[in-house]
Length: 335
Image (cartoon, rainbow, N blue to C red; front, top):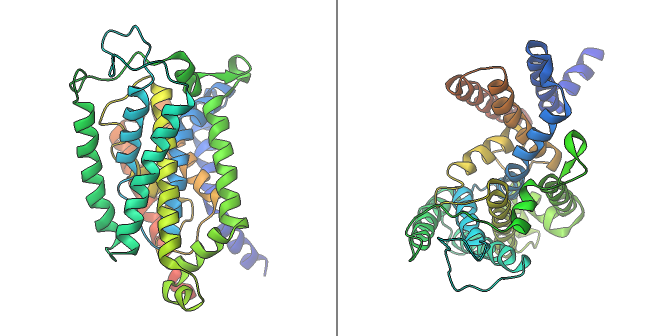
């Protein structure tokens, strides 16, 4: 009985055990890894990634997928940055644009993400295009739209810089000082995680989302308007990508049309490692957060101890395959 309890404990908490082992292993190799500055850097790097991963988690739980997430991040980063440059910047994207309240470009970028998410939802739910194909098509189209926007006169594909201090403070500012400071971007990410947790666990949207992912036909028979909820879910995911794009531009102090490239794959990997089932119907916010932290610890920690980027990719790939294999084994055991 004790052995069975131990096996159940390991199964239910595998993601957190892996995260702890990674941290302990790196700390043994280099004890200086354990410190407030390291934790702060890891949290900052994880902040935008966890928001993207939460958007992807919405869709994975319904049994779908979203390959357009990264390109939405890039588009919304460019849109927000293009409207929030200082007025005396020599290569201003919109030379005659008046000083806008900070919230206006941020809301515009989030709405743009929401609208593209809505388009994904309509294509998937109304036209019955498989999510992989639908979002692959919008991924390519969004990159083309972003590149056209980025190439407009007078910018002509130049990296967008000279961003306003009130904007970059969102990505680099903090409460407190030194190692004991809490970055604004981390606070925003925590708030978003809290809101999404409530949506997953305390709302009809969350309940129906899990029902659709568990068995779409059964959800329809039970009276759930699957088309309506899929459109809502893809739209919410798009809004989260829009917010992530805004924060990414604020964090880096600039933007180009290549921002967000391949971010969707990292987000999907983090979700899967965090326990979001590839077959739909299963996933939690804490699991997604842990999945994002695992990959951030891998990237940051292995770089910290001098492991090359190629070996990092090999380790990440092995973890992803192992996570999917474990997920499929659990699914098979329940059938």
